[in-house]
Image 1 (tube, rainbow, N blue to C red):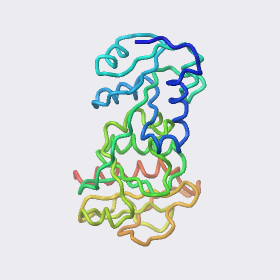
Image 2 (tube, one colour):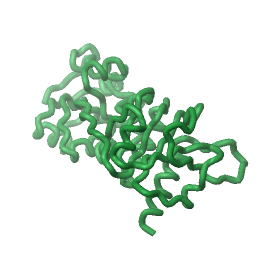
Image 3 (cartoon, rainbow, N blue to C red):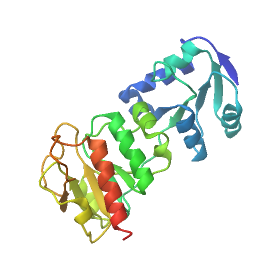
Image 4 (cartoon, rainbow, N blue to C red):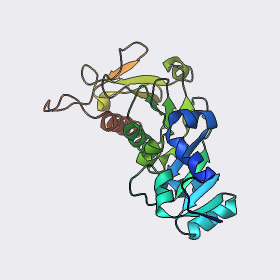
Amino acid sequence: MRRVTSTSNPAVKAAAALHRARNRHTTGRTLVEGPGPVAAALEAGIVPETYFTTSFDAEAARAAELGAEVLVVDEPVLRRVAATDHPRGPVAVIAIPTPTRPRPVPTLVLAGLADPGNAGTLIRSAAAFGYDVAVTPGTVDVWNPKAIRAAAGAHFAVTIVTALDLSDLRAVGLTIVGTFPTGGDAPDALRLPSPPAVVVGSEAHGLDDRGGIDVAVTIPTTGAVESLNAAVAGSLVMYTLGASRHR
């Protein structure tokens, strides 16, 4: 354990730099903020490289025992490394886990989402409903600290896979289910031949077209709103398709 009070400390500056996507990509590191997400990372066996805290409590002692460098800092330093204006702490620097190849299990596909909050919410829903998470090119960095915070630790409870395109998912036997605001089948009416890959497109434009989609799905609404939030729509489809598998 060391005490750090300067925002110019090299470890503090290196952690703060991870708020930029470019630095996360070049270093392979990111930030996990808050007691819940940090505890979830530790529970999953992820050892932080650096652990910033305002008090050396039991969780900090656990991180130290696992091999993390624990830095006890004051509030200005914690705000420097955190992504929130009034951080609760702790904040941990971790190595970004290496994604795996797709598996023949229900999978959420993030295809062009731009908002880290929506990405994190969908990852949290995927963990709740037993889905892997596939991230296609053009999607927000799911290891953005804001996405990790929105997922409330779910990043460490799901399997995250890479997919260059939907054919990678079809190759392992998944049925590609695209979410559309209109024109698709109701999700509770579907009987799929294999586990679904639920594709959620960008918040602004949705999915570009139905190319590569096996089944188009639309959540029925009263028409009082034009469309549902991407995270809400994806979560409802995942839940409904998951429930239909157990009827």
